[in-house]
Length: 355
Image (tube, rainbow, N blue to C red):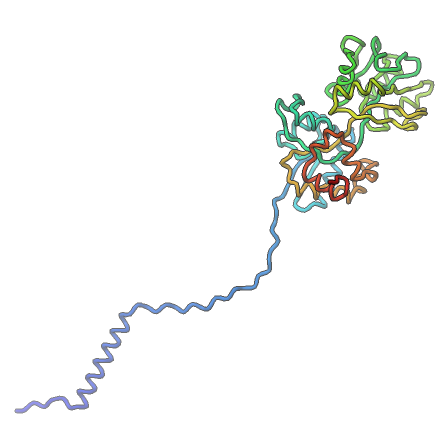
């Protein structure tokens, strides 16, 4: 019996089926095709403001009864309010030497002190603070503190040399007054522990002791007018007088301590009964910073202080009278050599520093 083969149509269909199956197997074994990536377009972005590091520091001032603490607090308020990313607060202390210890150890960002302290620190001569040179810098000079030598008519004291054999207060222990009194006496060869009976009183206590006949003279370094001296000058039946520091005596003191004192006057009328100017020597109360204080920030702080002096007047009435020229020139020449770059930029902008 003869077998019948596949018809041409069936054979063609079989071949097509086999090709389809082979194609299916081929495509099933291929790796998956990558997912098409959308074309990336660069988004338009608005530049964001770079935030600078926040600066927080304390201002070392003094006791709550003095001018440095309230004025330091007012300055801290202006800084916090008007200088972006900056906050400052007042810190109570015992006074200038304590302030400088806090400053050089980084525990305070600013410190009240006297202009000559900056010089002595840089020279390594302020051993009460540090036994090596410290790069303290001048920021702003606020007011002059003339040295008062207070006595009374009939005391027999007309010059500093006449203090010998008298009862004299050289100011409270470790105070700026005592420090300056000892400089003066040393320059003139007067030993306070041998040449007169020494007391260490505040100006208020000195005034009371003088009215009671227990004191002949006292030293006081302070702004004019000082209330306790005004009180003494207005005491009925008491004639206060101020001993001048002038001529050869002043020159000798300044030559002995060139970085400390400069010449000035206590103007007539500054105290009741003061009918003529009294020549004397003085130092200046200043704010100091270390050389590491950010210069751009200090420049902004200086601008804020002078733009808002009216806000300082509640703590210090003379704030509105402070000019950029005064804030630079009131400091002694030696201290001005150590001006901070941020403060220098401000004073140059104000036309105070030229060249």
